[in-house]
Length: 159
Image (tube, rainbow, N blue to C red; front, side, top):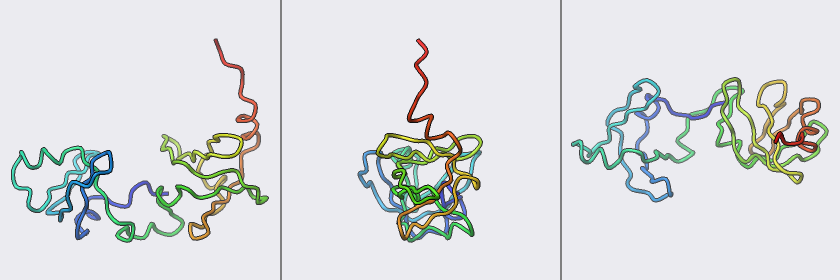
């Protein structure tokens, strides 16, 4: 699974990026002049932004690109964004719910699924995820034994 499609080299290849405030307001569309990684941070210089004051106004904005600009995820890979909203079915064809978000953890990603009986967290790994088809809006999983029981019968709270 790929969390994000773009490293520095991918950003540089894009014709244009939208700069968006956290509330969704589009601030501007800009061409990328350069991009590089600095530790875990992506540093981007935009065309037409030539001084520190203008650059400071862009700090903290989200970078958005149209989905059609994403490179292919690769064989056996899917982007987090392509999982959101997919209906989750177990291997017997029973609907469990829809993926609300993907949570990155140290070991593997976890699918947060909102279903009729509430939220369930499903580990995303080859033994659990049997396949997905975004065109059909579905993902098929093999739930670990006892997982649903944990969510149906939570332990009493420690008080």
